[in-house]
Length: 266
Image (cartoon, rainbow, N blue to C red; front, side):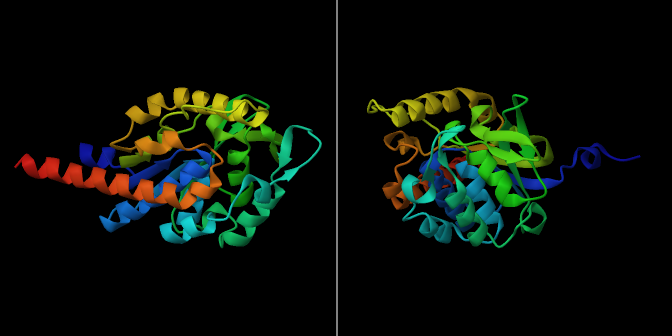
């Protein structure tokens, strides 16, 4: 008869979930670097929006430093095209081309680490997890902030940003992992904002994202939240390297504190 240990064994030892957050998602790369230095690497990843981008690049074999470098010169303007609205003010074709040329893997199956990418099915009003097939299409779907970007059509279905319903995808891997580390870049909305269509939209999304991550935060074995993320906005592209370093330093400090806590118990 099988023991309970065998029955309860999970397919993955360590899973890492990466939240959305626009350019703030570069803190994920910094956190991954700090985790690597402690010998912690994921057996599976899950990601939403910016977290899906960073996670896919990492699963594709790009180092955290390389990921940070890729986004040093990225801006909303050079990654999108303004057009007559037909579902969004910006087309995301340029960003899609960037991903296609940067990612070596073209499908989920080609990645060295499995990843689950979360998007929102706009037609049926539900959260969807992509795990196979075309990698770039799934990532783009996960990144399409409603109104700002036109929805991504996959197999006749319209998809928008996964953060609309689930901005912190811990639950998508929780049952399959012995331990889950969550890295959350959506800690606190910016304190001030300028009155413009773009800023009002971003402010609204930040508030919505903050509300829908609460349950998933509770599912983490280790929660990493660089608290200073509230100083940045979704499209603070010139602060990418600064955000990366903040993710790295805050994670390094957290891991050091956790290690000291364990040591003091003996």
